[in-house]
Image 1: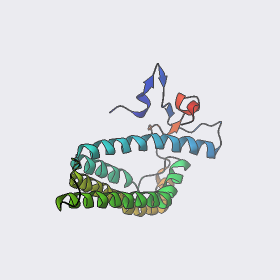
Image 2 (image 1 turned 180 degrees about the vertical axis):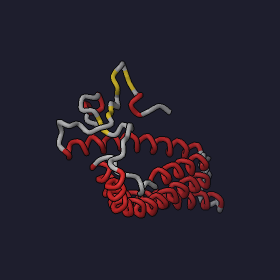
Image 3 (image 1 turned 60 degrees about the horizontal axis):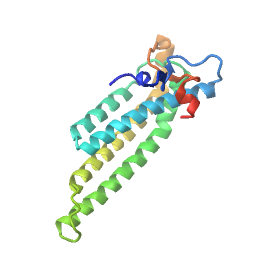
Length: 193
């Protein structure tokens, strides 16, 4: 898969990103650019997860979960910048709430699919040709992944709130060549995404 900033239509880059914040903008505007950039990356992960869920590729789902968990275990790394620390604050507070809600929703939908499969098996409702048991298993996998992400995220980001500033004080700011900020004049920014 290409990098996020490789997407273009008619020569216009839809995801024009940069590695550093815009010095002409204030902190709030730069953090908004940063969160939009992260949102684009998150949306890609969700689309990939949905594709795997629809195809029934449980190993692929678990592989994505493993990658995400390992990427979150960075509590000994120095900070890149203040926006990185804001991410830790959001990761310790907002993300556990959101992933917990996602786990609850996926488990609920998995229960519905399981109940439909059971009802079809008992002859209470007519078979609609869908594989409800397989779908239920997929949604339970998503719920388990979200629950693990909730627990691991809350623990690692909570710990990172303390340890990463200390690591930064000892080692200095970490260099990064990852695209982390949206460029203001990109097509995506112009369209208001």
